[in-house]
Length: 256
Image 1 (cartoon, helix red, strand yellow):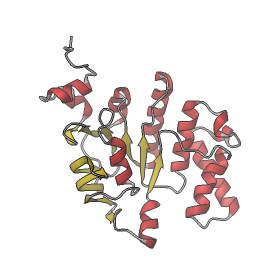
Image 2 (cartoon, rainbow, N blue to C red):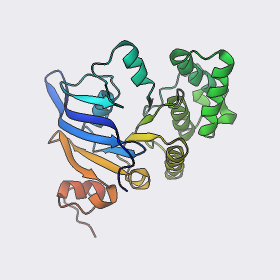
Image 3 (tube, one colour):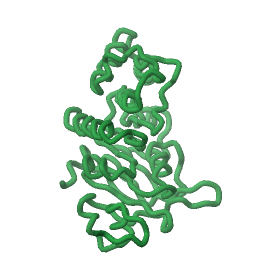
Image 4 (cartoon, rainbow, N blue to C red):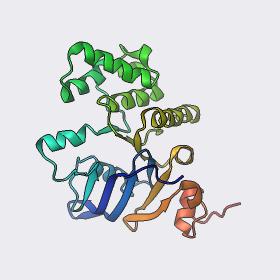
């Protein structure tokens, strides 16, 4: 599938690290409007580090991240609030507040970033729960939910302020295959119905092949992107390390 629209995210010449350690260097790519874009790689390759830089939690050592034309590094005040409203984030753990119901978790975001009255906040929060098929769980606490329901609740909260882009960190982690496939279907449905752009950090091959339009593959040793393109085409890459990842091969094991 070709890119669906103009670039909505631009990562340019990004180098990232902590202390004296460089985690990523010379990272550059674009995400196009309406795409489901995957950030892939093995453990410790810098996937989560890249995500944190893209959503503005950590400034890069070098380079820039543009979200809809706004620099996440330098944006301040009203400009930063404006760009934060364009994105929603669902973390691997869900990061739901355990003492609050699902309705309250979503309402909190709306109270922080909008000036809607309480009645409108409650209505919008219910709409977001309905979008992920959790309308009947509005008054449940996170501890009362299954793993799959927690993932969907986190997506509902990420949708709270009607963002253009959703960042999902390992959305299928810890889920059984059937529940993971249901979550993949939800991502595709939201992409179609809400015209959202998704950036998904994952190493789950089934989800990668099921939902992504394009991907980049990070590699720990080289600290950079070693492959980019459509996941099914990268299975036949000329690079042995890329083929190994996309065919789930351990070192020294040949394909049948």
